[in-house]
Length: 317
Ligand SMILES: *Cc1c(COP(=O)(O)O)cnc(C)c1O
Ligand code: SF4
Image (cartoon, rainbow, N blue to C red; front, top):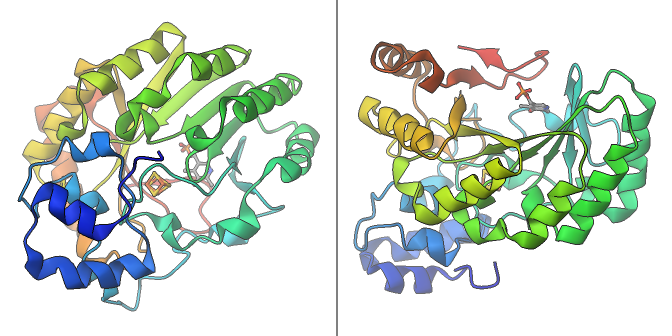
């Protein structure tokens, strides 16, 4: 993570990108800073501003375009926030915001505007969050989210796993993380030792949007996790110019299956300010999804979902 590229000029030089877009990139970068691990940059094609991996992390002038239905909290998380660090919207599951940090800054992320400093369940807030979970017997799954929970140290994760072991109505711990994709080195012995302390069912939802993200290092990380009984699923966001074609979506499902991962959700973009250029019309999304069903076995078709505020679950499209 320390080696991640956070300087726009450095990225431009590394990938030999056209200088014409540089000024706009600096402007967009002031709204949300560039951050991308070196290993992820290596999977990009130099000189190609339209590379599907580059587009996910590239600050662009288009981000300064505003639109009336794009806002800073599009999924209304702040309305379902009983105590700092907990988001309890759905029956049986709570989301624990363990950290605001990510290994990569995805330009389309709906959390790019989230007030992490106030909302992160940092160590001192964890006890309050754990008390909340302990007090509600309907909670059977705790989702570690963020930010990215795998940016936490192994020691902190071990403390969380130990504490959750003591809550008997919690059956499953789920981790939502991009690190096995963007920084697969994170799945090391120390992490596995922390993970092995947990006595709960373990689910990891990784986040790849394009087949080019999956390389040998990613396959190895997934393999190690699977040996340790972690169920691994993938979620993607449908992103214009990145994966909004039938070919690209089919290739992604196949590439995931090749490394033993099943697609879970294909998310309709949350309308966060600065992401208008990633939008795919819902009718087009639906048409793509229908075509996927004609080309793939059911188990390789992700569920197309949308996060609509005030709904008791994700909405299936
Ligand atoms: C998406 C989400 C979940 C998980 O939903 P699943 O359908 O179980 O994957 C839980 N809590 C919140 C707040 C969410 O946004
Ligand atoms: S929360 Fe996930 S999607 Fe958002 S910036 Fe972090 S890794 Fe990317």
